[in-house]
Length: 147
Image (cartoon, helix red, strand yellow):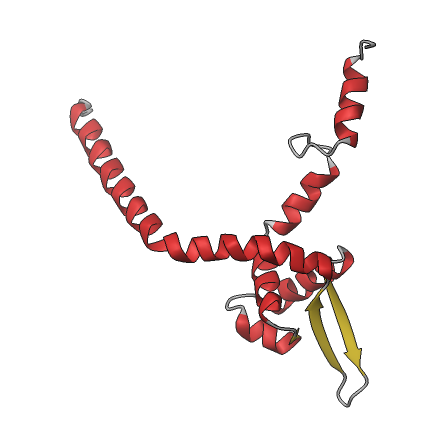
């Protein structure tokens, strides 16, 4: 087996899609699909095809700008399709592609886990904050006061 230079090893790793490498294309994909609006849009469209206004109502807190940008990016990535129906006014429906449905299966499990464990996480945060506050109070008491 021939010895590879460091540059050759990096090139080979880049070809194999190692997300831990900064220049890896899969990192861009990971960055896209871990965005909170992407997650929520994918989950909503996994329930049913929707029009823009339906998505906007379903996803509380998303701005018009962010929803539009998210939908365009997902369409560009091949995760959803945008179907324009020639009605008056024009009607646009968004639906997941086969690739999008594959992502939905994974994201739906994460969403379900978050909903199932939210109460435990909130309790853990409260406990951590209380313990941290008590520790910080002890440290402050131990430090000499400046005159």
